[in-house]
Length: 147
Image: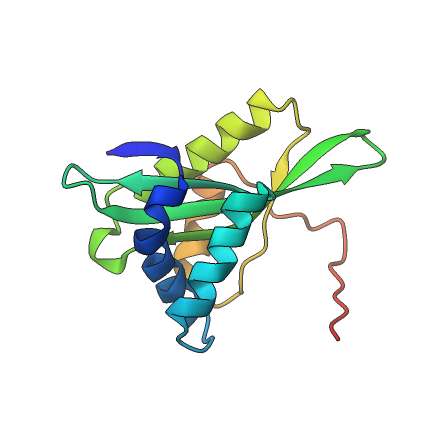
């Protein structure tokens, strides 16, 4: 398995995987809009995307992170926003490898850490994250405002 940063040459392949990720979260199937979204992230360099590529050069998983800042810690903080592995390739450690790439980014950028949110119904994710060193923050409330 090869884990590496995405390039614009990967756009067609990752767009299909990104669409499958969105459909998993009950969003409308729209490869074209997803391709534009991912293209913008790559071109504008406003997220970090790492991919997992198997020996057949097929992109089978990705993780996308956005940088934020912690004012109290006065350091960069990463939001692990998206993590997805093609269902045919699950159970092989691909997610763990992608999380390891995200941890390398945190260390390389001297950030204070990373955080994520997942649905309570995401059984796979809720089992995976503690196994990879994430701890559930029970000391704070998570609030959301949407327009």
